[in-house]
Image (cartoon, rainbow, N blue to C red):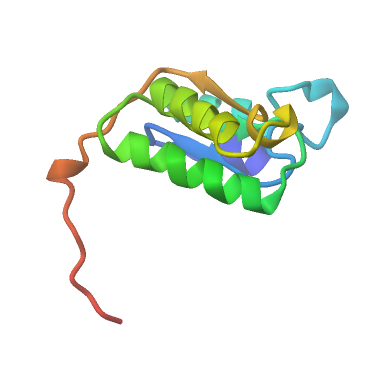
Length: 121
């Protein structure tokens, strides 16, 4: 975490989708954990998981989240839509869709103006 705190970010959104990304390594850090370090380094928003995640559920959740984000919806709306999609598509257990929390600003992206790489390395 000290390493993260020393860098200066200009990221609108940091996504931490690993098993225990919001727990932190030290219990005193509470629920925010590593997300706080990213916010302190300049990230405007952090999407982090609060508990261990099922790989299949996480893949489906992230796919839905990014689909909505790429359409121009805000991070909070994309989070809401991903949770709703999970509940309506067989992931009825709360542990499958409720782990992610958004901390910070409600950011949006304009992907229409982003350059697309044509490299075929």
